[in-house]
Image (cartoon, rainbow, N blue to C red; front, side, top):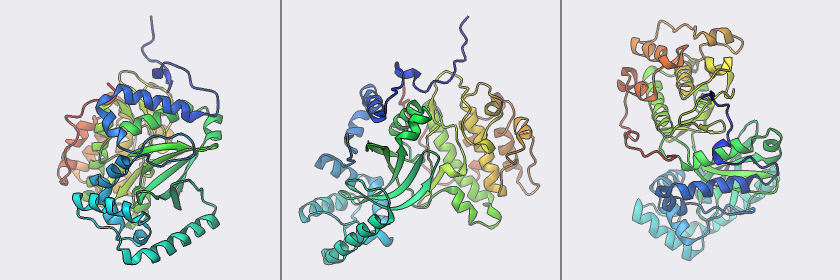
Length: 411
């Protein structure tokens, strides 16, 4: 009799084995091309975004692409806010003809003007100065991107803030070393990360615009979230905790993101404050390095972060989407009380879901956490049930309901 619980193979659904050569991106590109062909309802939308290009370039190819990027309401909104910050003088880098086209696009959408021509000399001077500082800093240099500063460092990658020169738009560049990916045999998982995040489209999930390669690196061009990681914001709070209303508003948006990806049969597998980003009051789920598409199968790969790992992960058992719900419960506890319910050396307590909720918690908060952090996954709430809980509903903001009618992108 066949075992219904198949071991995790991140590339098994692609119908072929992962390549054993350095040209990872050619493999990933074939995955993305296959996804574009399969999911026709996204094809026209994808083609008007950054066009995939081989080699050392990340530039959009056509004027149509530039117009789409500039006229996108999401990008225009961010650009208008970025112009109010210190980098506003560096965003103008277009020929006069191109500037007129872009200005027309912006005024048609949100009446956002570009920097005045009177500032052009100062802009050029500051641009030269920024390039000089970049060369001295030793930061990576890519054609069509001006790297500004390092945002963070991970096990396999570094993230940089960069300016897309042709559009004047701020992005985050996730630079992944090919040698590390090959050494850890993570080619297949990288393909899943790119494919899944490329297809996901939700206001509470960071967007992947495109990716390109150099001889030694793979670079993902991601949405830039100006207020950084939730964990960093939490460190600035008194006792490292949010009040219940603030926490509920953030958890609600994270729950919306989980509802969306779970409806698409995607499991994130690494819910924690470091993977939650903030951008002008909006909370976004980020870092899909451990994500997997799992429509009807259980998984068994042990991955994620220990302190947020569910009992199934710790014990090496089969698991499903409910591991994200466990992570959401632990995250909620940490936001409200300033620390996780356990320490890393208390794995036996984690496996039995044994923890104490401070007496200061409201009845609704206590009930919410207890229904998410349960020993048995079948007893945990789904993302939909969590969203409908009184603790979240009581603090609901005016957030568009985005989930119920979504078509499954991976069907």
